[in-house]
Amino acid sequence: KDEPTFYELVGGEPTFRKLVARFYEGVADDTLLRPLYPEEDLGPATERLTLFLMQYWGGPNTYSATRGHPRLRMRHAPFRVGPEERDAWLRHMRDAVDSLDLPADQERTLWEYLERAAYFMVNTMDGP
Ligand code: HEM
Image 1 (spheres, rainbow, N blue to C red):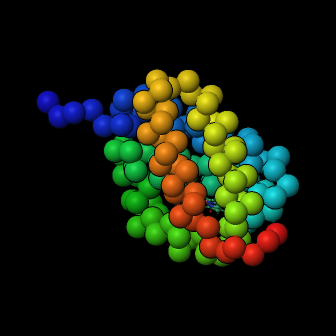
Image 2: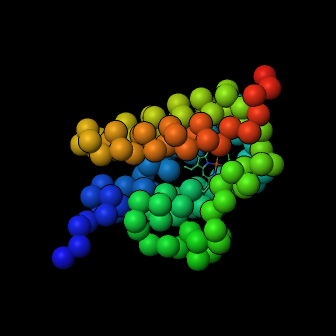
């Protein structure tokens, strides 16, 4: 039998649903990040990030089936992502990752990816 994917190891879909729901609870109250989201309802954005992360870690490919190739830097180009936005994003994500109570090695794997991805998404160095 094949090795389990990281997606399976951390608990599959419920784990990613919990992670991203918790993350967006933080974004909803964030005066820097909330205005970046074009939609009144954060539900669709929650769904897109959940499906993306599930796919990235070896789960179902529903993200690409519905949204196409991720091209995440291009998709973030319309939004101002400077160092402050990146750090705010990571603060909410840190809180969300902590809420999962994963084993230390899984926690580190997930966090190192999220931190790297957030640094990669920065598209301006101008101050706020
Ligand atoms: C979409 C902000 C980092 C994954 C979005 C949207 C905003 C946003 C405003 C549009 C809402 C939507 O249509 O879903 C930010 C900010 C970041 C950041 C301020 C700070 C660094 C990241 C990172 C990832 C990510 C690190 C992946 C690990 C996504 C995905 C979408 C998205 C998958 C939906 C793309 C689509 O299918 O249209 N982000 N983002 N974002 N973001 Fe981010």
